[in-house]
Image: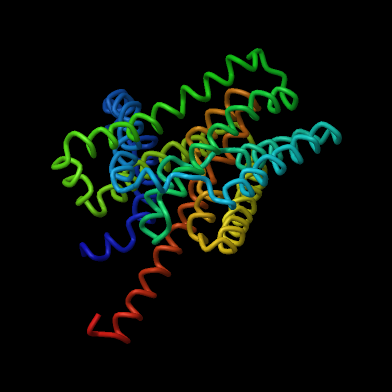
Length: 323
């Protein structure tokens, strides 16, 4: 039973989030717990992300934190694809039906890499250091591009400076604080650093708990949205296409530089919590369905990748029992 849970952690976490939402939405006896649960979720999500990154950064060597060639190529893809969608929206005044779907695609394209992507990358055997470098740079790119481009698509009352600082304030504390704490522990408290480094899969399981919360929030935005099922399916379907393309493109480019896993996770695994915030702040709030559904798509792909890796290891072990 424990082995089954370990092997299928991400799908089980997604299922738990979906079941949890419907329980709180339809079981009246749980109503008194809703304010308590909402208050806990508000601090638990950033705490989980912070803890995941601290454990991951403890295993990263500073000398390895330098941009690779593929880093700049993927950043360019993020920028060009976002500008292309924005230009399409400006040139061709699509009806509301397609406009929302394209805005959702734009959010999923420019959205920076998930702060927890390094956890999955390490689990898959990729380079957490190169992924961390890309995460920092992609967040900075989004902080510059979103305030400049999104108001052209949907008029906004926010100035560039205010928007820039808001996005940085949302992202960089969670990225930088655990990084500097990891450096501090490495230098001044080596026993604590060694203990945290020895917690092999803890960051992965913390990510699974965060995924459960994210899936619950995603189901809420989909079920309680004020558009038709057909529109929701179109938005979610386009998000699926974008997700698959980004994983494929990242793996293809990363593979040319012997960093296939890191490249795929860098471009494919998105900070959907930030994306939902960007969508509701700068665009039509219904657009948030796109990054909301992206949570499911990217973690289905992650689950499949982890399954493939596990099967490969089992095959290698059966062929070489003395390993």
